[in-house]
Image (cartoon, rainbow, N blue to C red; front, side, top):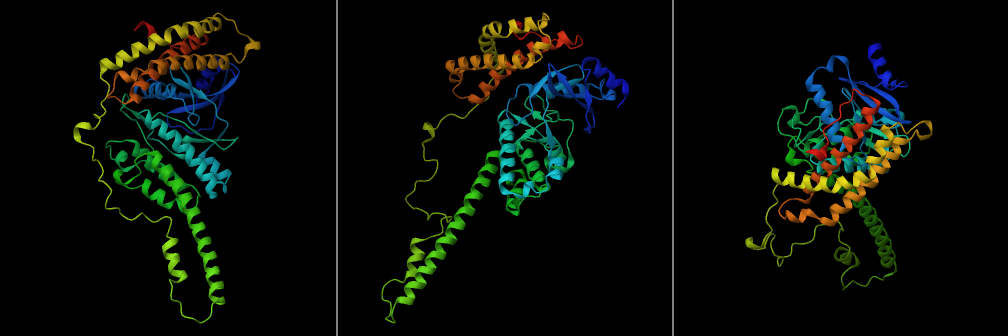
Length: 425
């Protein structure tokens, strides 16, 4: 890292601290912004004029800024050659395994880790985002609570950004290495490879094997399927333990009864036979019922129509509606705050102005989404997934938040470009 490059960052962030994070294209810093710690990721000098890497940084920010999940690092703002996220006080998964060698030997701890990681992964997939670079160095574990924070969407795939610039071969699925089509199952392969690196109990071996199947059709198809298997596995071992206890108790009872009986031949069904009939394996599949009607007996003309995607004109229509809802709320709640900040109405007494603004954003967005729920415009598109409609609404909110956020950043750093006003489209 050249001293001059570090000095450039210090012009805007005087207390910037270079972090010992190895990145192939970026340098990383811990900075104070409005009295709050943030993580800043900046392209190295040799990549700042390469349009591919500049576009990759823009892509990562635009995608990340619109997403909000407790186990996903929150994106805050972007400059010409850098982006800023919340700062997470913790360690990468790689570091955590070294500093806590016994942590993942506990099924409880491993299940907590997996449930949080799979929850955020399922959230990404539900928003048409495939991460494509899941690895221990992109998973942070917080110092308080050992919670998961997933980071780095630089290589992700979406229906808008279909070009992916890189991968980590050790965790990449065969189809990713071959340059073939990728989807949610590509991330699921990486989950299995990550589990392989952890000192977790052998009960996860079947999960690992299914995650890392070379054929995507043989893997888990969704993150929820993995969660179901893990929870089912816990129930399975409880059932087995209970079954063993029941059998042991019955064996003792039978032994006592047999000891008390005389030598008279038994003419009724023996106790052991009754066990076979009344204490079947609770995990066994039910016997096939010949009277059960076959699946899909609904007449063809009564089945619901298949889901279709929104057309471009419908997307434009939904965005126009969303902006019409957002505008009066933001003009009433956000614009006055932005004007006060840009007018210089802040000092050391208001060092946490950014936190206050974030709270106003949250309150404004809650009001906007309440209108969305009340209007329920997804009902106007009966053959389109409601998630698609919701995504268009959320994209509009994200664009408006980004616009006002950059207005504030531009006031602090005139080199930051202000995006087009979404209300003037």
